[in-house]
Image (cartoon, rainbow, N blue to C red; front, side, top):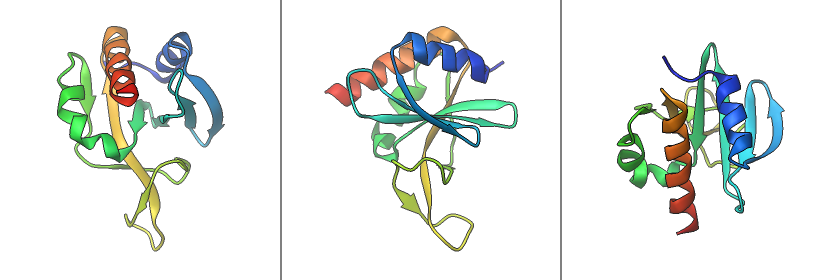
Length: 121
């Protein structure tokens, strides 16, 4: 069973990620000590973390962490305003990124640790 939205939000706060806004089930966070945005999106009962598509080269490394599940297709949402846009289903382009779900709190913690290491180089 994947982690629920409240569990992920609490852990992001515990990991010192700053929350900027919450609109239509999308919450924007900044990684600690950086200006790198990530989004927590609640879609139905499924919560996922969405990162910039530029990190696609690290997707297999991130999904190699036990308990981390990546989505095969890009995740689109108009509220992810710091991400690039592309044509999806509608007439206009929409923001997109890579989405991940987590089976355990440890998986989320390991994912965030690895992502922060990638971002800070």
